[in-house]
Image (tube, rainbow, N blue to C red; front, side, top):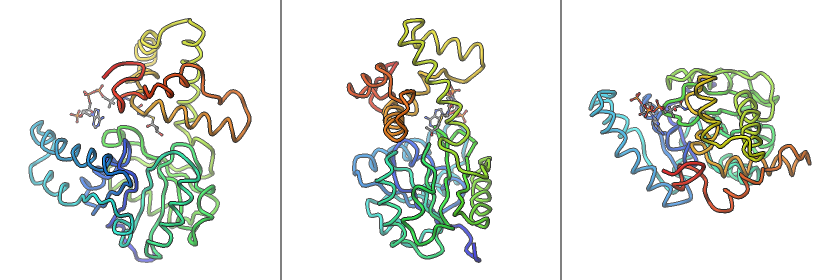
Length: 287
Ligand code: 3HC
């Protein structure tokens, strides 16, 4: 924008989503720096990359040269300032808590050059809840990837009232360069398109389990075989993280007071027991 082509991307948050977005961008030829405050999360992300790339080469999905180039394009650092200082685009993928995101965007606004576009990969939170902490609301937008980000093709680009058309266009182009298909939401709405629909399915599935109508396995079988989804809602919650389902539900309940959003007994119990899905080795299923 204003002559700034996107070449350098900073990913903040190396967790479930962040490291796969980072690797997708590196594979597409962007120069990527991925940062996280948590040393362990960073190490795990780096470890993923060092096993994933050779596996893709062995599987015939990548040439050795492509894997080497992606590896060279991607750096991990604990230092936010170092990751942000020359970025053309930041994609924030940290925990789904508004206050943490607001603090981070204020920091990013200070650390990044004036031309940098700041985006959030938040699953639900619209960027107008964040943009006001920056001096560049016209360059703030939602850019929402799906899990697993290396595989899923869709990206939701959600334009806030503060977001400039030019920012939106640049982001749509970046998505295409990453081999993704962007869909533009011209107005902000909590949960965007996909998670609104997914939440309806998840809530109904949890209700059916809580009522003792069927087990998670039976519901997953029903959804995969009858609706043709690649995985049922419980396997999917294990993939995306039961902690996320809990935190998002609780925040929404606290914000709106609507009991429909209050995490169900099943989700609350799993959250307390740290049975968060694949990331902790156990959720509705064991891994
Ligand atoms: N990371 C990276 N790549 C993965 C992966 C992972 N965790 N899991 C699978 N893959 C890749 C495999 O390497 C394989 O690649 P290839 O065909 O190029 O060799 C391909 O995906 C297929 O893998 P498998 O054969 O092992 O397994 P499946 O065919 O069962 O696919 C799946 C796995 C892609 C996860 C598929 O089950 C699926 O699409 N599930 C639904 C996922 C979904 O709905 N995602 C959206 C969630 S909502 C969300 O993200 C919102 C957010 O806000 C939380």
